Amino acid sequence: MFVTVIGALNVGFLSSLKLFAVTLLGAIPLGLIICFGSMNQWAPFGFLARNPDDGSWPRKFNANFRPIRLFCRFIVWIIRGSPLMLQLIILFYIPGAIRGRSPWPAGEAGRFLASSIAFIINYACYFSEIYRGGIQSVPAGQREAGLVLGMTKSQIFFRVTLLQMIKRIVPPMSNEIITLIKDTSIARIIAYQELIWAGYAFLKGSHGYSGLIWPLFCTGIYFLTFNGLLTFFFGWLERKLDYFK
Image 1 (cartoon, one colour):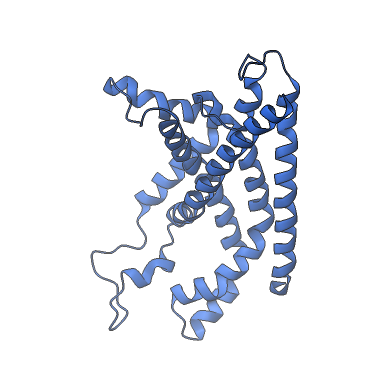
Image 2 (cartoon, rainbow, N blue to C red):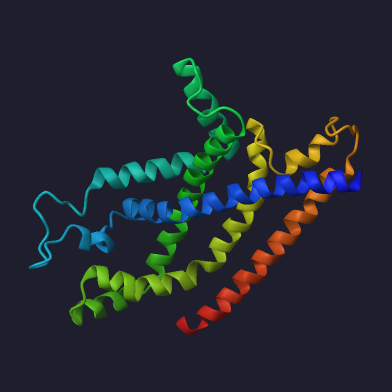
């Protein structure tokens, strides 16, 4: 019995880790883009639009477009103001109800894809606010000093603001990332077979066993262990970034 339970929990934990990793890979860069949109500050990407010869901006490129800021803030408001579980249900079921057939692949692959998209969008919006706070916490005098030295806004962001921002956002980002590994259990609402699903299966009669509640409590050991490793890693990272004080 014990070997069967541990094997099932290991499979569920790997599914949780996969969702965790994909969410981070998508949400971290997307959150930065949403942050720039909500702040209406696209200077870090100026090198993509500027004329390489004289550094001028193309006439059709507007680095200060108010509708983008309003749209990004509206999306952040919607995502932060509604439960992740509800967002996941809407994303997974509503398109199929409208179209008459589900747009997601059949089986576990479709549930994983829907969960990944919902989690990435949700956490990107939270990350965007953390980024915004980190950027705005860097003294404006340092950016002004960079301009006096002849640096472009892109150079100031990547060489001055970004490095200091990373130091400031490590604590709040670590909180969100630790929350993320626990939030993967929400994906069971659309029958994605993550860790909690694997533990609960023994309570309702899976693998030939019924009424076993202790496998469900054992899932907490997995979360505590992994979150302990994350806590240790972020503590080490904070110490490494102490030279930005």
